[in-house]
Image (cartoon, rainbow, N blue to C red; front, side):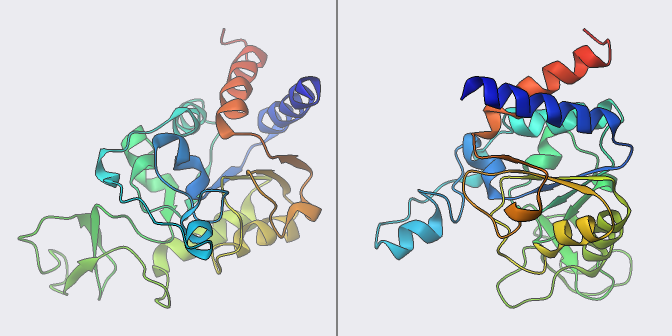
Length: 233
């Protein structure tokens, strides 16, 4: 089994090395190793609710980026990452060092507020009820069920999904739409699809490569191998 994992990691590294327009799509699974719950994993929020188990309250503001987040920062710094599309609201991508201009947070960010008129987004200061750009009302940026996704982030996510040559899903069950449309858009536009997720997804059948292992067993060794391939170590 370990040799099979090593073989798949080697293919993953080759795909990243060859890629010129890599897009990474992240879900709650990338943050579980930071102590935050996912939703549909074996111990996820919805799974526990369905079984009648209690939901543990977590102080998400205390969570720190883990090795998976840090690998994405390394890819960014090596100019191997074009864009990140995230379903997460935990702020860990920005906290880890991802540049805001290459990140679309489709479901908002718990630390940000957004103008309901012009979509301007900024850090959440309680004494800032109005937008400094247009005077519109500022509201929490987190998207509740039934609300529309932020237009700018959604447009950028679709554009980069259509334009990428490699699309890697990290820690998402791909069942929440319209966010989960992005990998399908990428494949239909000619990109390769790789899925790293503990649990099946509806798009497993169109992925070139699947990983059901923990993210920490895939991305850090892949980064080590990539840096060797790039003659950086």
